Length: 236
Image (cartoon, rainbow, N blue to C red; front, side, top):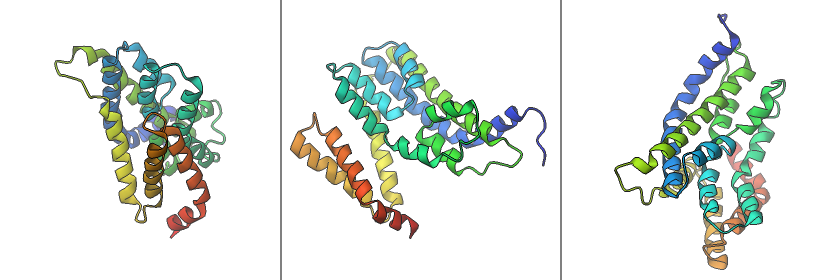
């Protein structure tokens, strides 16, 4: 079947159904992030700008907390690097898929979140659809959903007729849900057990104010050392 009209519009139409399920999740989490940032004392410009420029959901929640903390650039850099380090592996996986995408490639790299990576890596793109434009619109739509949610949350946060105290728990809830999903999808739980053990040991040794970076270093090192075991399990 041949596509009619603009190839850009055809790619947009093909990409939108893949991103529709992301819309609900990003809108809700973006709202929670915008409200959290607003009730933390920032105007709506902050969640709008950070969701556009950082575009890393968990990191944006952390960034809001860091803005309220004492100035610590090295710790901030290391924390941001460890939280988003998984994107290194995402990027390696997309070498071939991003080849030949031209001027769209820098944006595809910049805008690659977990959900966009998952769609662009696994989607069966029809032969009559330009793959570069398909991946571009997947990435763009997902970012629009997140920025819109964060901006709306920042605008309405101060005027909500409800007590928004504790809204920052949305970040904790997000991590818990992600962990539970990974745990349920992993029959042997190697990485989950590693994460729990590393976090518990680091919490005991370094305390709650300094356990994050050591625990993530332990997790990263453990995953690298146990990579053959993990990959063998996945293959099996």
